[in-house]
Image (cartoon, one colour):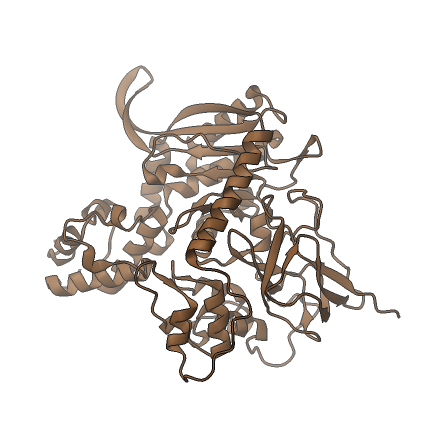
Length: 86
Length: 443
């Protein structure tokens, strides 16, 4: 991969932007780092797919289906996005 | 030649609709309309619905002004049919509640595509209808990539560009158009996350005198109550009139999920499929194979539908649900079905459904498994005669060829009208769904 690892701040911003795009009225301040995003924002499978698409576009990061279970909360999303790809 | 004007009447947008309110006319006397053009926005208890025209011609008179609540079948406008054009009558495939029914226009056919008979004159500028639609939906036309001939922006392009899940009250939409407010820039209200008229007024560029409301469509609470009442009436009718019988079976999803996984691996996120697309396609094809379950119970008898327009139950974020149709779902390739599903869900939630989508479902699928339950035994939408329910796909011990293993399983149920079919027929539908899901590559 060409893209270098992101900083946690940039990753967090990307996740928030992506969520806001899917659920414009999302209250992201009330969402803790470990909150389950799918439950909190009632994301169905289509919403989640759109979220992944947004995230991938914003970060330039390829996200496979196998990676979906690493995208459960704000903090696991940031972990995933900041990890150096091997 | 004597001018014969056709009447454009308040359509029945589902069995539960008795009356509707014109929220907005998108045409005025003298405008040329084509069959399938969206000419008005009608407010029902459930949603603001874009209503298509069923004939081509010139609008002669507007008979009902916005804000008036009128019964289904009331003439709303008169249209002088085009010379030589066939006066298309609405097809009789919809739920027969007596009055005219919205025409069946497949959403896959962009209504604004030139039909060859009337090539657009001169340059491909955006049609006024498209421009108005864009204004109303808060879509910036400059930012929309056109898919029509010569890069022209079609209605569908505009609709697809509506921000996901942004909820705007129909009245706020209209007000925004009147005040020239860019809806995309209007923040939603804290609390319910909906853009109301108040937010639009606050965002209006000049603090000039605001035109008094012609008819506010009510507060969010009132609309919520109206939707609840509409669902209550329809479901009570269903349980009162329809002798339901219920069947259930367990389907092994291992083959389908493995195939899906392999397929999605090669694709960009935007083109990936979700399991729901497979479940819907299998249901649609199965419904075509068992036509006794695809159609309507009308006037004491069953009338099979000539096509499968698959109703998809979509839960709305504020509560309530709608079950609009994916037209000709059995014939759509999976990619197209997936695109249609995304489009339908997004428009259902932003309140931009079309009349034909509301009135056409011939059988409905509910996929409550998305919310975590393992099985759902649904209530049939009259006058339909069947409803298919999918639970959550769960890993469970399951024996295959004498060997016990952990497999992804889904519980598929059928609620069917015992007046129209017997359990034996219903069982064939579930069998067909199971069979189809074992050969996902054929779907």
